[in-house]
Amino acid sequence: MTERMHDENLRSGEPDAALLQAVRKLPEAEPPAGFRAAVLRRLQPKRLPWWRRAWLWARTPRPLAVTPLRLAGAALAAGLLILAALPLLPRPQVPGGETPAHGLQSVTFVLPDPDGRMRSAAVIGTFNRWNPKGFEMHFSPEQRAWLLQTSLAAGSHEYVFLLDGKQLQPDPGAALTKDDGFGNSNSVLLLGNGHEQKL
Amino acid sequence: MRSADDNAVIRDVLAGDPEAFGLLVERYQRPIYNLMLRATGAAHTAADLAQDTFLRAYENLERFRPGARFFSWLYAIGMNRARDWLRAAGLRRETGLESLDGADFPSNPGDQQERLAERLDLERVHRAVTRLPLEQREALLLRYREDFSLPEVAEALGISLSAAKMRVHRALETVRRALEVDGDD
Image 1 (cartoon, rainbow over the protein chains, first blue to last red):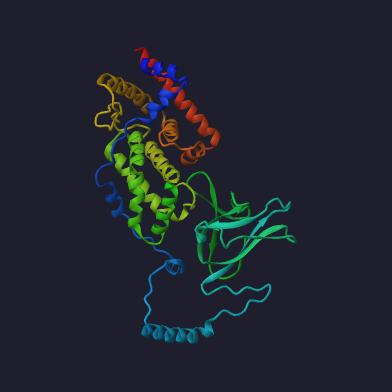
Image 2: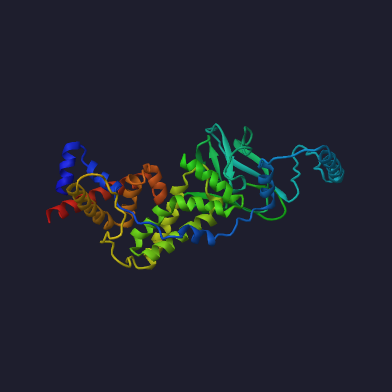
């Protein structure tokens, strides 16, 4: 250790205070000029699935100017839309049955909890942007398991279970897992066409 | 709070606005570029690898968990890129990093003698830190320069918490020993 640092250490009484201070002050080089622009030039806009674009559009606030003429036009358009959509409205669901929305598939997530140790469980993944809201599971005393039935688009989805609002756990029953880039695993769900998936 | 800002930016990027990603590049280009510069010792290679790091982050942004710290996740991607490069390059850097010419030293007020002594200390510490193995060096810098918590260091390096503690401890020990030898010269 240098003599000056040694003196400072003696003064501070902290064995590594001067060393840590020096580490904090270590010099850094500036990135080359135009670095940001060079990265941005190579980016392609994210192509989101239509349902996510629609969801984002619906959630984005926008100003709305209303005039009597526009209001009448909008009411007429809405009426026509409702008439046209009547035959397409989803049929009522019957207990034990499932009528997935058009283009979506019914999926049941199952997380066994034989000892009833967890207080809550939810599914988070790429399909809900890792947000548990609306994807909470319910405990089935008969099956001694947490269940969530939902509908997802066909394709590949990564997900994990969120236990008690804080602990992440991959699906023990998943056939596929994928490294998330820093040591943890996500479960992978592949949805093709056709039947309901039991997980 | 920076990580909350990052999460808002990421939402915009995922909504189809690649320009928003520029904010994240601007925030973190300096530490990522310097990570690569320390790993490779060559400015042009470091710039290429840093660019690759941001591009990989962009491509995998859907897999980033909102609420997590973006910088840790980005650093983990950068570390993997640096490891790949070192493996391919046979663990050899293109040039040494002994010289501090052109480096951006902090300039503190004080008399000339004081500044000279401080620079001398910094050069010795810089030399010792530069000679550390990649994993120890980055653990030390993340912990004490970037002010990462130990769990965040563990996440960024893809290792367990106890391994992160051990790496920081060993890095400090190694630097301390190197400074003692250096000081005896």
